[in-house]
Length: 205
Image (tube, rainbow, N blue to C red):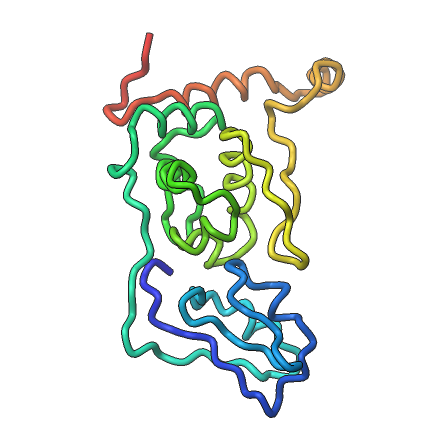
């Protein structure tokens, strides 16, 4: 998904303008113009969401003449700020948060520091959420929240709200379920260690 070598193409004769493709595009690359879907080739990241969900099979994926890569280099932003943002979101900077594109937390943090303040802009520039399109919205929202950003949800099915993490569990719930074999504080301690582990494998004292 890092190498964008395909492009969504609409068959105008088949398209009914139902807006399904608009509602599932993770980069908001599709609009309805004169009751027909129109693809913005600059924003399309060839995720296949529109093709897979078009009810009338009006969309196909075609090869691009000039493939290109999407990536935000963490080295272009202040390393301290990247680490601080990841720590606040409870991620290790090296932690992979999108397995489809192998996007790490540090890249998303760098993208946010560059001013990409919505999941759609982040997807556009990093490729995150253009594989399975399901799991990685959560870490993206967590990192945005850690940066003090609350993006407005677009009209559609591109993403859902942030789900609670182990750090969000109330103390009374912890106490109740600890008697049933759940060890939330132990989990939190371990996850904090993971988040704080340095690249060398050594932890800060």
